[in-house]
Length: 335
Image (cartoon, rainbow, N blue to C red; front, side, top):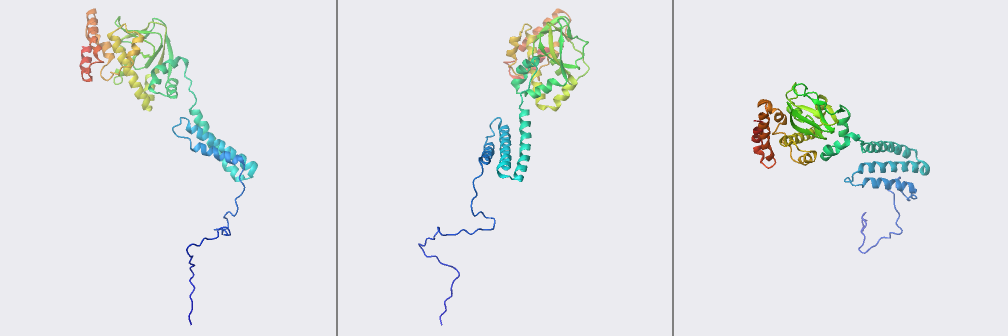
């Protein structure tokens, strides 16, 4: 008797097309969706649109984080409205309330950081001329000028410093208004104009040697106003701000260069000094304080002064000579 063994595998003949119209979907588990529910309210879709737009904002945009946090805040608020009025879902409302608070706090903080910094009117020209071109943020400039410095005034004829009497360790100042003249034993050396350091040579040359006195006299030629820092507190602050420390090194070096050219040409005016501002700093090769005071090592007579001024005339070629010649020229000026 022949028996036929039925294979459990069903072989589908070629060319057979299953009837998909009468096919019945079998759910994988009990929670599978049998029928799609109705579309949610428009508020739900607007909220998700806010999330989508916030996430695709390019990071190259200047205020992209503010826009992102703002859109996330709006989206969370719309989700709360949708969950409360149209869905009656307490858990959705609570979670989005938490997200709303977090994003709102971030948004407020970012807007606060971007707030416009108001610089005092007396300091605005100083910031625009000296610090803004070097990309110093307004808030950093405000910290620099708002904590440990003050604005002082001098009337015409009053002395900022007297030679052999005033200590160089106390302060560093920038002239804001007016004009000052620098002299040595009655001999005029150069002028100081607004937006220039008053005592930068002394500040740079006495960083390692404390307790020295001014060897020049600085007198107000007009009614003057200047910004004055406590030297000790300024040094401590700059040590905690490396970027600003480098900025000060550059500005002081440039100011020393300007004073070098003023010594070579005492008639140099403010307009000409602005052109010199564009030249590179030579502070690493030259010490103007030594040039100011080098007359003390020569003669107290007019001949000594003339020898000094003739010696400084060699500095007029500093911009055209190669860097390796700078030290020799400096020594020639100091002889």
